[in-house]
Amino acid sequence: GAGVSQTPSNKVTEKGKYVELRCDPISGHTALYWYRQSLGQGPEFLIYFQGTGAADDSGLPNDRFFAVRPEGSVSTLKIQRTERGDSAVYLCASSLMGQGDNEQFFGPGTRLTVL
Amino acid sequence: DAKTTQPTSMDCAEGRAANLPCNHSTISGNEYVYWYRQIHSQGPQYIIHGLKNNETNEMASLIITEDRKSSTLILPHATLRDTAVYYCIVRVFGAQKLVFGQGTRLTINP
Image (tube, rainbow over all chains, first blue to last red; front, side, top):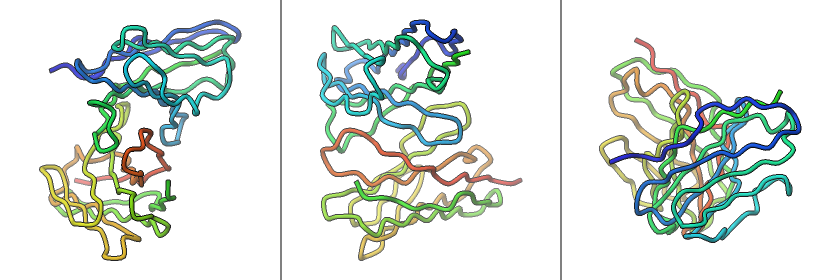
């Protein structure tokens, strides 16, 4: 079956602009996660959804970052007033039921470049 | 979550066993050891996890010491496609997020 998909694969924007990054999880997976990966670093947790609600948003760096998952499937990560430091690969993952023992399946990521 | 320590990089010859160590000396009783890997330009991929017993699946084996303070991921017959960054992660059962360190960059040489 299809894995986690993310669009766009690459996004180039200018400082101060607004961007939206989309994640399509594996069908039937109720848990969805966003991570951010800077060059040479491991992924860093941003937010976790169980169903439609954000169960843990402790990793969002500031209020310019926001994510939604209105129907419990597709999620959108929104970044306002982008800064050059936001440049990174944004990874989405999903898992079955969000139980701690379930493996997370990752998408290929969206590479965001803020000029 | 307990901190993990891994070598920055390792090399292994194709066809040989790759043994990747991980130190997690502050691990607590309810924390599992997980391994993920990330091939260049892809998202991380789950490999294996365990609590205290050794585990094996089609990808790898996980050996956890009796005191649980360290573990070793074993790729029994490494291929060029196993070249990747390997992350050892300690995670409380029921916790949702994965806390990645810098991982070990494993290079399989022909």
